[in-house]
Length: 135
Image (cartoon, rainbow, N blue to C red; front, side, top):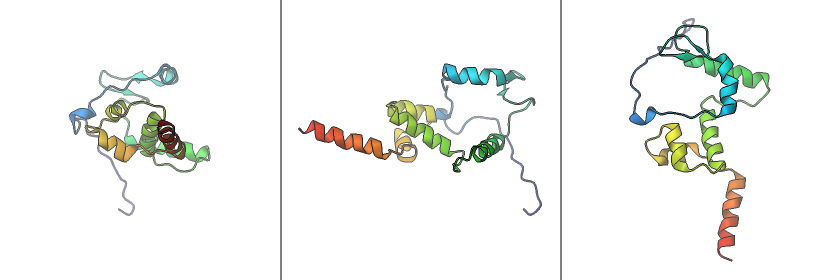
């Protein structure tokens, strides 16, 4: 590996599972932010680059890492955004099944066991609810 460049092969094909094929809604604010960046280069790819090929996934990860450094935000792996998203969804009272479907999980337990991380405030609210129910 010394001195060798690492290349990633982009494979476009059928996803691992049927649940990987999904539609993700986009809210109006995000759409407004992304619309000026969108360029349709052909009928198959909607990309945020000027190239007529899919964007290499590391491009987004590297951009994210640089942005975090520039903003002096403690490091969080790019995949950590997925965990944060799932947790924020649950904190916002989104139902577990919907969050699971958005993440592409075939089983809701995957979502609950791997992606949902209750914070202390949620734990306190849970305990408060229990005590209110037994009064």
